[in-house]
Image (cartoon, rainbow, N blue to C red; front, side, top):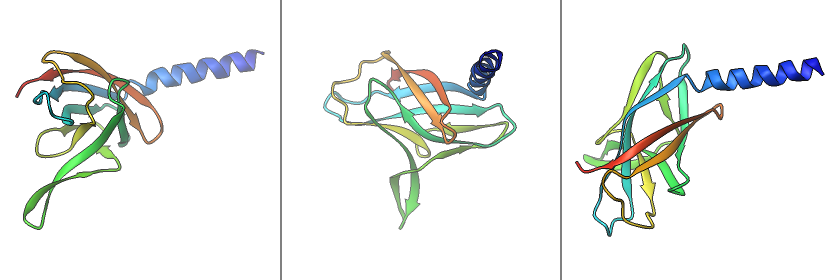
Length: 139
């Protein structure tokens, strides 16, 4: 019985520590016209660990369809495409920003309201979840 307790305690402590590997700052959702069905989310992802982290997905209970995207030059045209992951190098920060890597919120069901705040989850390739909040911002 003691072994089960210590295994469970170790798992909880490891899980708590795992969530300290990522810090999200400067998160914001682009305010779009009411008829729009998609928008972007931008943020800075700081990896405080000694290992690279692959962010495999972004999600929210408020937005059932989300993807990670990047803007890239293709045949002399800027194009947006879905990416399988976002690499955040050890002890560094990766920016999801206009014109580069970013998150997409697809199939909006209702218009966004300026200063409205939503909770999101980044999930890495090891299935660790990192929660953060972002506000709708006009820019």
